Image 1 (cartoon, rainbow, N blue to C red):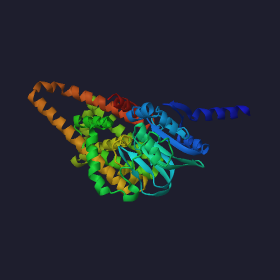
Image 2: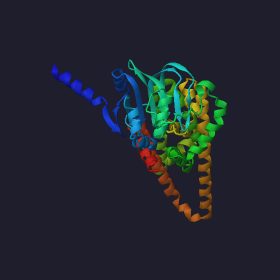
Image 3: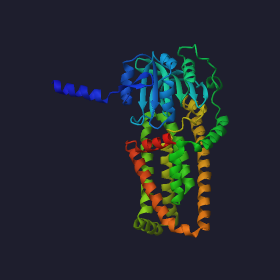
Image 4: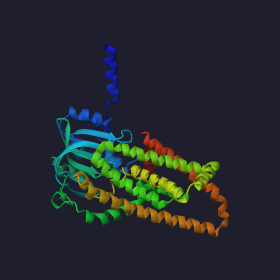
Length: 414
């Protein structure tokens, strides 16, 4: 009888989280949402949750520059500290309870959300995501939400404005930039701002996966606007789905990633293996023209849908307070509109850049006919890149985290 009990005990220990040193603090590293729930059930009082992932520069900044600060360490000494690394723990939202307004800081903006009461799933729209609140009876009552990094003084101000007492000898607390609890979210004013920020974010390393697949689509003579349209739609819809459905929305993301990975893999095989390409052309020519175009267009759109799914975790450093406030307060229509404007801004910038590069390449080829011999080699390179991206995306859908790890490393290097 003792053996089964011992085995169950060892299994529980193996799947449970462990203590990890982050800066000058010891965090409990949760291994799953169930593990987090178990931890909260046995720990009462102020609680701080730090969500990070590999290849996240702002996460490293918090670990090496903020959590090592003695005043910050002192301020958090009385908290239950929990860390979740979403590189290895597939978490898209964290269950909390909200009783009133939540203080939100994001990308230099700060304010209080509209009042909300009841259970809620906080979407992990990017890393680092930090939650602070009170653990009462195993339920985390959210008081503050921080998206992105802050310097030590800014982090201490975030704790104070979230309602926690911290050492104040070095902190000069400033009022929040915007107080949405009083003025409310104004999406019509936020839309042009979100569009402009989306266009500007094209220069971020976070957009590297989208830019890479977009370049493959152009080189493989796919419909770029259909790819980007799929990206815009799935990004906007998935962000709202995560906010509305929480962890249950992860199934939609897996399906989108799987579809996009399959399209990329098939596209690459057609470019690399000439017999397959010939059979494909013959098969398509046997269909009606409209049906053929529709089939190819559906593939382009599916590829774009997958981009929206994999790109969603990258938005925290660039999305405005209005979108976060709209989603936290449950105003999903406002949140969808703002996220749609943001995605359209990025898509427009990507389209302009990739089309300009494509036209330049065609003109260069016309001037130098000698470049024509490289046409087949270029197709091979594009095909191999497409196959590699498809495998990475299918690996992401299978829960291996291949896409996140590879592009996380590249973004960290850049």
